[in-house]
Image (cartoon, rainbow over all chains, first blue to last red; front, side):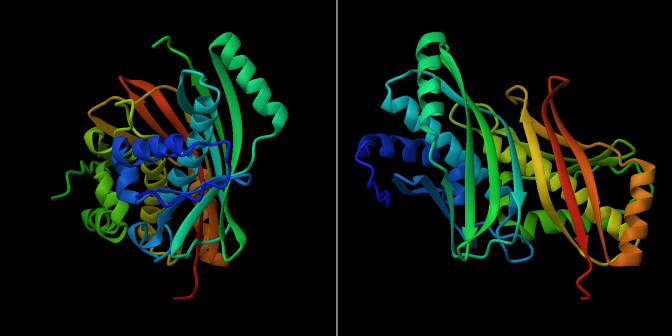
Length: 163
Length: 163
């Protein structure tokens, strides 16, 4: 079962369940990484992955997993936003940048998407409704021992391909 | 067995075997992704991963795998460079940026590191020998149907921690 702590009443449990199912079942590598919804609240969507499955040869978290976890956390944030506004479209990542500030050694790795600025959210929703496509830039961070260890920026596009 | 086509006589087979062993055995997620040495020649180190293990929910290559494959290809390039010059030190990625230009649908995904500029290589080796640490910026690309589909820049640091 999903272990999400959904304290944001705006996001229904069914949408979180749909997101978890896509991550876990339709993207096999996310299943291998053990990526799960950790929380969805006013602080944004947070996804987790266990360290033990995602070690590198230095016994810290593998950079590829850290990047993937941030990528999917941003992706999931945009996915939920489109579902919340019942806007059709595929969410695609266009570009991203990441800084590895310190090694991650927490038993559970948690990536959290920073809340979307209200103006950006509104512009995104309006563009998607009016033009059938829209872009959203997101910030995702992974903390280790309460200090930012990974800082990620991702640019996501939603395309309504008319399906 | 490793399927590398090593046409660069400067890189001994034993070093490629060591790199493959680290990737496959010491970074479990790379093993799951099926990352292998594809080639190592004058065009640079190339690593591959099979598409079928690395699909997303749209039946194209998962962005997380594409990023990890590029990350490890750059990492492996720096690893081989330090080994070639018998310079001790841990190779660490500090930051990277990636552009997803088009979906990747090739059965075998191949990431290739662009050859290092000779001046950059020399500066890197001198700095590492003299100061015990050095930085190298690398470009890695993934082509699909002979067109660049993913463009990656990574900044790697080698630290001689005195071990």
